[in-house]
Length: 96
Image (cartoon, rainbow, N blue to C red; front, side, top):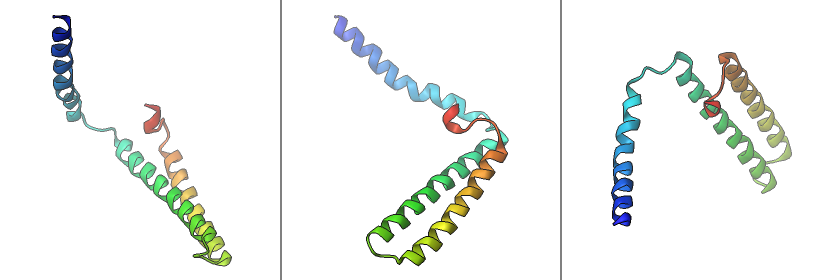
């Protein structure tokens, strides 16, 4: 009897959860939120490029000169992205 009640409550929770979560989607996002999400994605992509370049260098796919040039360029681009994120101010998506 109790197990059946728990099962019913669990099923109701699972079914109702997407419906409740969908209710907040009609809200208009704050002006900087979309831009911040884009910049955070660009930051992660740039970090990935830096790691990939380092891996290519370590595996011998890239000369040291090419690696240093590429690394310098990628890090400069990452710094630009970080400055843009800082210019938006406020908390990031992970702080919300």
